[in-house]
Each structure stands twice: as C-alpha cells, then as structure tokens.
Length: 141
Image 1 (tube, helix red, strand yellow):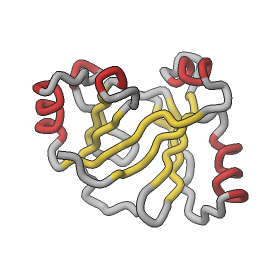
Image 2 (spheres, rainbow, N blue to C red):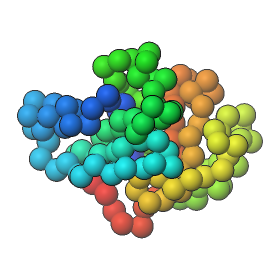
Image 3 (tube, one colour):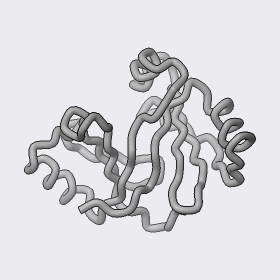
C-alpha cells in the first residue's frame, strides 16, 4: 500500500535555527520558504534532499498542537514519517480495517504539499506517528 518515503517531519522550536543546522552543518542547498499553516497551527519549511525531504515544523501560536511535543522534547526532534499512497481514502479504509487508529476521525485534510493527508496514531504504528499523503501531482525530490 505505501509508496515512497516523502519526508521525515522534524519538530523544532525555531525553523530559522534548524535551517542553519541543515544548511551550515549538513550542507543542504535547497531549502523552501517558510509556509504558515494556521489551520494546523504550524509553520513548515522543507529541506530538499536527493531522494526525499525533511519537513521542519514549528508551532504557530500558543495553542499549536505541536506545543505538547515540544514540552516533552524542548530541543525538538523527529515528529513523524510520511509515506505516499495512491488513494488517501482507500489507504484510510485499509488502515482502519487493520485496526489502526486514524486521527481526526479519519477525515483527510490538505497537507503542506497541497494534497490530502491523514495521520495514524503512534500507539498502533509501533510508536511512530505516520502521515500518509496522496501522491502529489507535481513530483518532489
């Protein structure tokens, strides 16, 4: 069911500081502009890699759902992994049929790449928050 790894989400208290790490220490050369996603309570930025991306995520406001994660992990850290799927509704239904807990009552929302996404609870995914996203129409690295 899953396709390619699209990105690894990394929570951070500061995208600007994280960009410095990926650019100056790790040598990343292609980093997107920061995009505000008020409906999800976060700002995001993508570090393009040869075969995938790193999604840097910082809270947008005090009520951001990311605040809890950063309270437990003040320096930030890996937040989720994202895999592409051909059909988000079929993937959701398959996950539910297999006993996985899909967050947001299973209702897809539009993610940072402009395609529908769902999140699967870490308790049913071996401790990892999994994002499934419908394969973007425009290819990413």
